[in-house]
Length: 235
Image 1 (cartoon, rainbow, N blue to C red):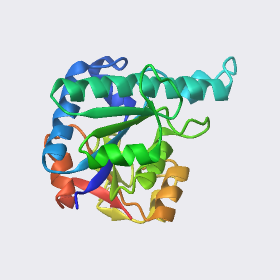
Image 2 (image 1 turned 90 degrees about the vertical axis):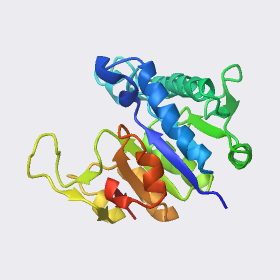
Image 3 (image 1 turned 90 degrees about the horizontal axis):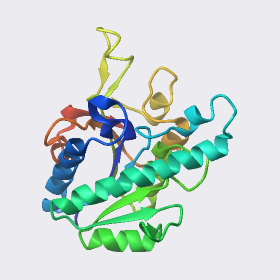
Image 4 (image 1 turned 45 degrees about the vertical axis):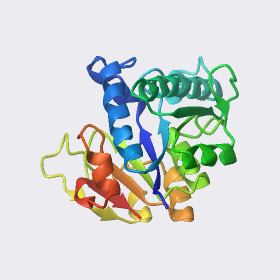
C-alpha cells in the first residue's frame, strides 16, 4: 500500500524575499519536491496558509474588520495560493485537484472526503483550500483535520527551520533542537509547533506531526523514507 501524507506549507513561504504575493520560483521548487513524492508512489494532500496575502487576526486587529470577516478573508487567501500550487503542479505534468471548504465551483471542487480519497488513490495530488470553512480556526488546524479525514500516515509541516527548538534559533545561539517530543510538550508556551487545537486533534487521532525545512531539496522524500535526522517529530 502506498504511503499517504499531508504536507502543510505556510503562506509566507510562497512570498519569497518580497515578503508578500507569490514567488513563482518557490512554486516551481515546491512542485518539483511534490513530484518526487508522487513518482515514488506517495499519495499527497496539501494544505497551504494565506499569510503572504492576508492574515485574519491581523486584519481584525484594530476592530474595523470583524474577526469572523477577517478569518474568511484569510480563507479566501488560501484558495488563491491553492490555485497557484495547482497550476505549478500541472505545469510540470502532475495531476492535481483543488478542493475548497468554501464552495466556489468555478475555481475548484467542494471538499468531499470520499472524493478526495479517490483522487489520492488515483495518484492525484489534492490541495485542500479554504481552511476548515469556519472562522477562529487556523490553517494548522485545517491541515490536521484534513490529514485525519484522509487517513494520512503523517502530517508534515514544511517551514523555514529544520525542526522544533526549545527557543527561537534565529534569536538564540544556544537554542537546542528537539528531535522528538510529545504532544503535551508541543503545547508548551515556549515551543511554537502549531496552535493547541491542531496539536490536540493530532493527539486524539494519533497523527504524527513532522516539522522540517521546506527549502532543502529532497527533504520531504528523505523524511518519508525514514530519515528523521532532518526534522523533529511530535508523537
